[in-house]
Length: 154
Image (cartoon, rainbow, N blue to C red; front, side, top):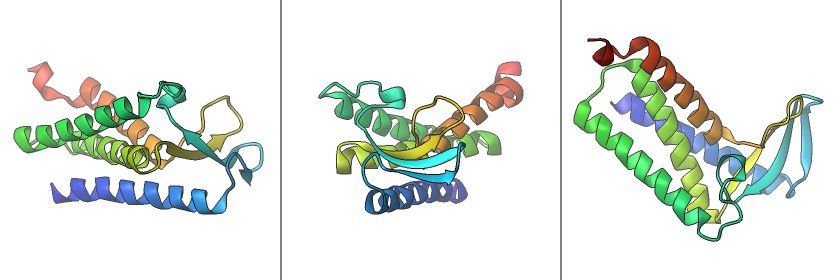
């Protein structure tokens, strides 16, 4: 249990450290080429969720923060109550909690989420470390549900 909590904390720290670096080192909407034509860092203030959902709503930050906090609390309750033993399930939940917490910290402290990773070879929204953790966690939980969840197969 401690290992999975530490993973979530590491994700939060890595996310917050990279965002602090972006805010202090890159001007708003300024772009730094990391791998030309493939990857840039660009500082973007995202007041919404994925693909800027709810970005133009004044209550969007409150809704998104509440959903993230409820999600984190629900996952923690689930882990403490159900005590899952699958490492894949615990890994996916830890990644998603770390990512959700990293983004909610931004929403509460800044009023927006700092996004900065921009892929150039496809048309895709700018994202951050927390978003990567959430996405990888979601993919892993889908894999777990399809291939490894024995409770549904019994």
